[in-house]
Length: 608
Ligand code: M6R
Image (cartoon, rainbow, N blue to C red):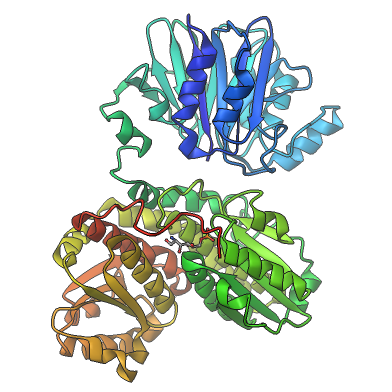
């Protein structure tokens, strides 16, 4: 997730671009750049936060009235000046900023290189200006149309051509892009906060649309090149609301971003016929995968919980034994890592000190390490042998939500990849799971489409002192994450238990009206789970059950039920956690807690 801005009009462009980028820094902040057009294209970029670019520009004179800018959250290639946007073609006649992922950039890059194009970055984006150079015949709009017909993936892009200083051409597919309308000046941005200082009149572009922005007007064209009469959308949000896209907190915004980031994490990693996972980033050979005899997964907090799901799915699908450790334990417990063992570390930030130390311990013992992380070129990404990136975009709320569900997705991909190569599942079963995986984001969307009942349940339980989460199998691992979410943001004491374990001690804690969240999404374990629910119900607990649509028998034992869409039982974790995130969120809000910055906690724990 990056931020893009653009301006064309009668004022000095550079300060307007910089101001706009400042409002988008929450979308990414590892490097930034601008390109302005006056007697040719001039590009300025800098690594690090926007303030470094500002320092770089300080004292320089531009007097340009048109320009585009970008603040980057690295996906392809580490944060560096060469990888920073804007990107140009060979002769500096075209310049592009881009947010999203061009899935087929490797074959396109090879094809362009064969024709003599020289690339200077590791990014997917750089193919765009070179494609413009290839197609351009004196009309930027036509060239952009030809470019987008060639690329696959997600993009919000803005392009300038040195020969056409009177326009910016933008295109969108699966990445937000908004045009701001002014008086003899117009703007573009990937998000509303960047525009609010100048205008509240906007055009929200839809997938497949191209807009030609000049100082005097904006023309929008559809997929077939037909001109579209777009309705002007007037933004009513206050400036501080806009950064959170109208949501009260970043946590809620990030919960609602999950359908999109789940799609991003799957993008390009599944074959078109759903028969196989395509994990090109993993260089382990089929031989190495077949010879792996044990997997260790290590991580902290929410990432550790993703690891627990990983154990469940890798063991089930790839039939490989998996041990999961909290990273701060792994590093000191002298784990026995023998030849044939593989270590997976999971970390949103890629900077967690204990996880990094665990990775080093694994290396010290000679193991190969795969990192699942969200931050390109983070310490963990750099030190691991292989990296699977989760494309969750920057997560700002301390409580991890979208990072967790994308980590789960990465785990599923890895487990299916291994299962395919090791031949431990029938091809039809792999296809069934992959087909359902494609639909997961729609399942999350449908959960998010009506959240009122979850908010009402949260209101009912908000004043409780203790809460319990129970489940069996995969549900138990998600129960742990639900419990962590609740305690970290609402400060309610919460514990998760394997439902079958309650009677071995914890049942003594169940008293009248204590809330018990019972996860019952596994058809094979439903009867057992219902018995466990009855055990706590008989002691006076108030039950909120989570079940798959159609499992109505649960209503006989639960006071409140939250249903999630039916899906292959092995994939339920991605769906069941969403109501738990919402429950924790609404309970914390009802208690007046500082949801995005809970007490005593930090987003990245870089100390032991
Ligand atoms: O950046 P990491 O994924 O390595 O962070 C690990 C934990 O600190 C993190 O998941 C923490 O538990 C979250 N605050 C939970 O919401």
